[in-house]
Image (cartoon, one colour):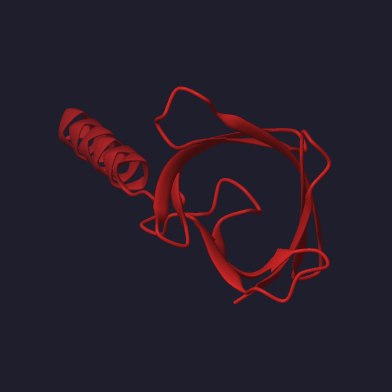
Length: 111
């Protein structure tokens, strides 16, 4: 009888362990604060652009698709033309400020 109880408890423990380790979070959490759709444009110009960063490292700037990587406060945008662009960015509340290597500044608001 003790052996049967021991086997039953062991089986129950194994089932509980498998149950807890088999479950995972189904929601994809953004891996970057950049993820989302932003609307704005170059500072000093009245031209609206849409910039989208997806959670999978891809994005779109108006009609142009790109891949991107982030490191600290830098984002590298690669359109696949062999000349990736490095931008410095900061996010405050729902405002994204981006500065290109040549000093051109863009400001976007999260949609």
